[in-house]
Image (cartoon, rainbow, N blue to C red; front, side, top):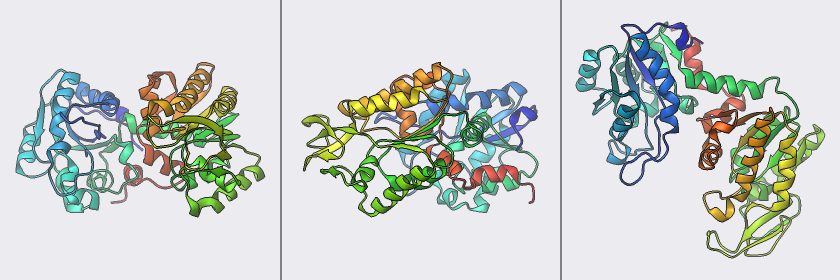
Length: 399
């Protein structure tokens, strides 16, 4: 795949697919600008070459056309602050006004198009919609790894209209390089930390990892499916009853492959799903009726930290508990502390997007780990061995 370092954008209008799907509060202020900051080097490279930039992105999941809360217009002030220049805005991503603004765009200027998903044709991968988007620019840059697993018009289909002038931006390049680092000949001991609510979301990745890792640490709501499968009493903790056999199969598979699979020995439990609930700590296999596990316990934290400290490669995807509630964030923060300490001692650490990235950002550790992925679902699918349409589209030249 071609990278933007191999291209001179002088006099070109670069159509750049970015992932500006950032959270906004009720006043439309950006509450986390990580994804915007990630795209800055790519945009600056194009501008510094003497090119113009046309930015396209989605925001949220609008159901029926334009909605104010999903308008990319709210990002303009942040972009103007970042690039110290006026950022033009097209009130639609296609149509005569967008076409005119793109046509009149001068080198060094930035144009932001309105939310792609205001058109159903985007998610349908409509070729005519992709062709109309393509007509706005001279060269296509995909820097939106977070949507690379979707075969949408702006992430996959559009590339066919740029048979030679298509490439990946710095975010896409870094995401793929870091993912390949933990997929390839990772330095050992190699530890994967898997958390989150459901085992069903992580089946394929866990199966793949069992062929690669030395240690697999399980946390979050999904751990109680493993505990129950192992004969434990889990009270009213989250469980996927239809996945108990699968959990047993994964435990057996780990043992057969010599992987040290660890389930939390103890859990922080509560009598309600609330930060104000009554709290206790119990062995994960002996949670009383009407109590639920919402975080890993102190012994589990200590055991996991010891394994992480001895690791040379660490992949972390999914929190250890309900980290959004302060009383149940201790386990996730303890794991984050251990990953940061191991990284400082020379380990390579990849934080796998989604809630893990949110947790690392919340604790202020983003610059103290090796890499924080911006693409949760895309990273998981890539590591499961699936072809990502947005990546494949940049590789093909057979149109």
